[in-house]
Image 1 (cartoon, rainbow over the protein chains, first blue to last red):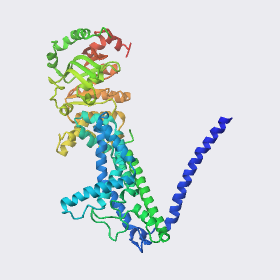
Image 2: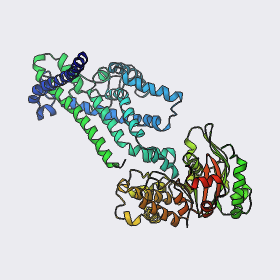
Image 3: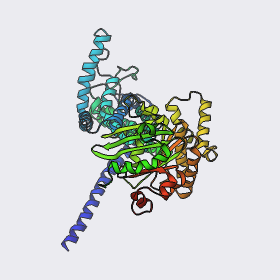
Length: 300
Length: 283
């Protein structure tokens, strides 16, 4: 009897936990959608902020975010793919190098994002940037300051584990029998990897890229010190320009606005745009993966 | 197995070989009409001996079948012929594997070139997730064999005709190879192997994953192919060995029990263990 009551209680307890999660999610999303929806308009998406950010739109922030994640992808995808290829195709699983680099990647994924921000400031801005200035600009300040390229590189380091894990998973899913057939035809290991294995794992590469972008678009802490700007009258046009970014813009609207009450509707709408963007990217990742799986043959 | 030392194996083997190879020494085995041959070959996985002092010829433009119970080393033996086991940690061989009289395990052997000369078809049909055309063209493309596209097209057609698949697929060369049936996929894999114009074709139980009709087609095809290629087939289907092969080798626990013309092995086996196996008393 006692056991049965405990059994029942446990079932209700798990159900309750699920309800709490759902309620939380709906409260958050509902609140944002309800308050933000009305402010979203073409003007909001395409105009500059005005009147101390209490009026106008968020186009520079959207543009900056897009540019940031694009640059970041250019750095992170090739590097991540190469590391994944090393892990999956070349590394000897028992070697020191493999075990060390493997745990390095695992640990990289667990580092708090603010630490990446500080790393970016110390390494990219102050060390690499100053070095570039000294070497190419006669010591004049050009790259030794927070800039788009340093933010993109910092974000690339942050999202590297996401890409590596996703691509590696896809590479490992390519059947060994394909590799054997390729070797039996006289293919070298690199030919097999680049002409057979990697093309078959392209869905993993794309998903990895998109997941990295959606992660990168949502992070603020890493770019606080390395390139995100409070407000800029112009869109960034050079690699060493600063830029506005959606996540950072939200932070600014929340804490730095001269009139917090007046910016509230804008804040809601900005959050909705950011959420919509990351959600959309995740959906695209899922669709791309499903699509390519169908294309590459349901026979396996 | 304590009685089946090397001495006993050789004693059984030589009287049978005498009719075919005239001389009994290894160099003689390598010459004559043998395209490939094994000379006192040992193959190890780490410390485990999988193939034990096997000496046998694979005669040019004939089909040699290797039979034996599971785990007897027949696949290992086959995979030494194109060095497919090279990448397995701890795998090594002693003795010689000769192709046209040259030891393919010699340190100067070009393994890539070797695999072009000695093609392979696997147990499970394993077409690449590409189009039918790209599957057949893969080997030629990676080897840079064919620069001219029209020649490539021609050779793809030729390979598909050789594999008796042209009429089935000629209208859908750009379709995914994954759409083909199992038997068609296996014939595509044969076409893919033939497209790089090998001299020897290794087949590792090529029909074991197929239905009887597809199996019959593959067997027909093999008999057709031996006009141009030296074929080595591993099978645990004795009827299949009896139907298609000219020579049959019986392997047991890594030892070659006997190797002789197929009709002879199946009618008057020289060793009681062969007889026990082919009459189904074990295996």
